[in-house]
Length: 260
Image (cartoon, rainbow, N blue to C red; front, side, top):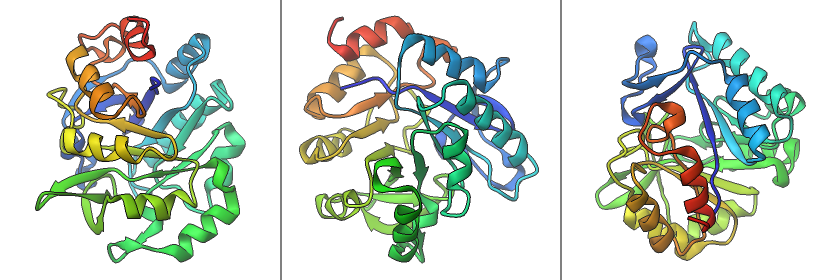
C-alpha cells in the first residue's frame, strides 16, 4: 500500500470537491476546498517529499471556457515535477503526447475508451499504440447501481454499461500499467470507503490499483488496508490537512507505509 497524492484542478484552481456534485453545465461543483496556491506549488511539495505516482486531474470539459486555465495549471504542475505524476482529464490519442512531453509519467484515460456505454477497443488500441502500455493508466471510476459498481465517464456524470468485475479488470489490464478508481458516490465526502468495491479490487490485485473516495479518518485507512489486503494504493483528498481537512499529511504517510 502506497500513498498517491492528488492535484484536482477545476475552473483553473486547485480544489477538492464532492465528486458526485460535478456538472459541466455552468462548470459547477460543491467545493470542500479551494487553494490560493497554484498546481506547481503542490507538485513541488510532493517532489521534495519524494512521493511519486500521484495524479493531476483536469475537471473541466474541453469545451468549457475554463478548460485552458485548468490545462495551464496542469502543465505547470507536470513541469514542476517531471516524471513524478500522472495526468488525466480529456486525454485522447491525439493529445496524450503533449502531457507526456510536459512531464507526465502516465496519462490517465476514461471517456475516450468508451462509446455507447461499452469499452471502445478501437480507441483503446489506438491509445495503447500511441503511448505504450507502460505509460497508460485507465481510470475506471465508478458509481453503484442495482448492487453493482458501474464505470462512469464524462467527469463521473454518465453511467456506462460496464460493471467492474474480475473479468473486465483482466481484459483491460492487458492495455494498462495501472488502474485509478474513484468511488464517485463517496468521493469528497470523507464519510467512509466503499468496502465491497475495495474487497473486489484487493482480491483481484494483478496490477497496481489506486483507490480514491471516502477516506476521512485513520479508521477508514485501516479498513482500506484490511479489506484491500494491503494491495491497494490510496489517495486522500478533502480529509488531508493540505486541503483543509483534519488528517495530518505526515501521519497519513506513516500510517500507509506501516510505520504509524
